[in-house]
Length: 253
Image (cartoon, rainbow, N blue to C red; front, side, top):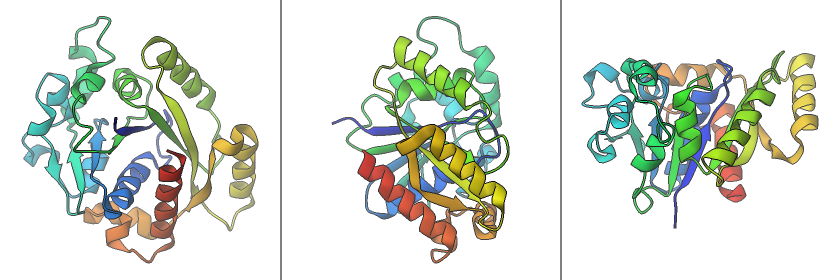
């Protein structure tokens, strides 16, 4: 049985992508399933958000793409069953260092081979771009989750993202499917948020998750403490939202 490998992608920054990657992975892990979170973003926010400093770790996804075995750089997090393949700012150079060729977009997929038994769930946090790192994530994944911020211009660029997904599906990875679109940073006090949510649901229909992640101070604070929201404040609305999103993700398969 192959792992469920979820790429979390949106070329727009600031949409809650890394927050979603960390908290969704943590919620699934807390349910008792071994989960691997792969940080493919040179900003390394998923790494620091789980309490690690990239310069103090022995290895990162930069080394992974240069041939280092995955097992040698995975670290355990404070959340039981949650493991991390950390990132490092050096990863930004990988796009120019990796030799071109027919297989340069499938490096991550090849490196993940054999992880199925240990990690039934894998989440890959992508950078906010459609470059080589995101292509590698999409080539390795069999499922895609697209976080969308409930603010103006929410749909901007999504057509381009879905075109890129279709190209990857056609040329590299026919297994890639869209699990869902997640509305994030929803502020129920504003008419704009409700209008954007309605527009996204009209555009994507049943692909949009029922659960909406609220704008939350506690969610914003959690990464500075190196913790997912389920550990920082398990009773908060943000934690409740991500628990429910995780259940939807599992149910959608």
